[in-house]
Image 1 (cartoon, rainbow, N blue to C red):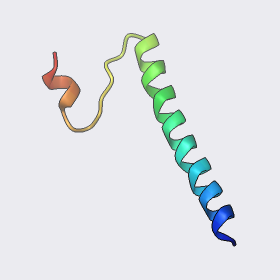
Image 2: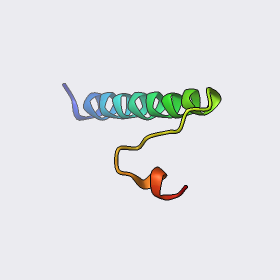
Image 3: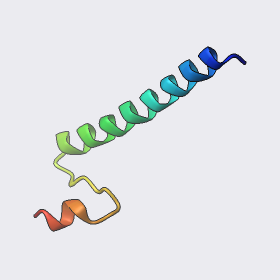
Image 4: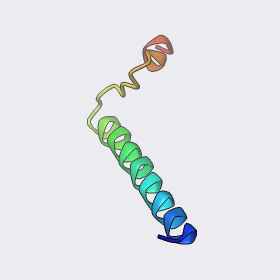
Length: 46
């Protein structure tokens, strides 16, 4: 695998992870669920 292909694959995988994460937060917000980040940051902001 060339460096260019590896970079494109890495970019694609990271983009997919970010988009899935944003989708989960959006779905939670649409259903009036509180988003949980796992670190307690959102809980401390309330």
